[in-house]
Image 1: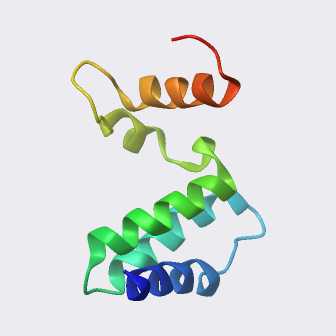
Image 2 (image 1 turned 120 degrees about the horizontal axis):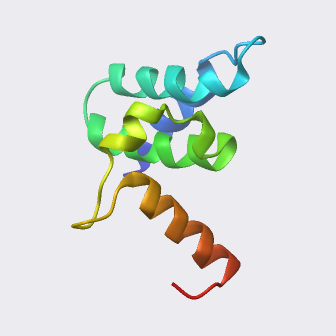
Length: 92
């Protein structure tokens, strides 16, 4: 797991942040994380979490959010809304 964290951090730190569109760093660094190889799903999951914390959901392409799901009947946008409510401690 430590190796995956190191690979994820390296992919983020070594991918330049574009001056004209800093938010695209999310996609570019995640692509780098996957191209590193080895345990790509774990490395990409860690990198995606760290990048999401840095850039927020707005940096995630809409097409990716539409494909995301984690619970029957909930879309990626539904899950993001639930996360925001949780952070704000609002009732479901």
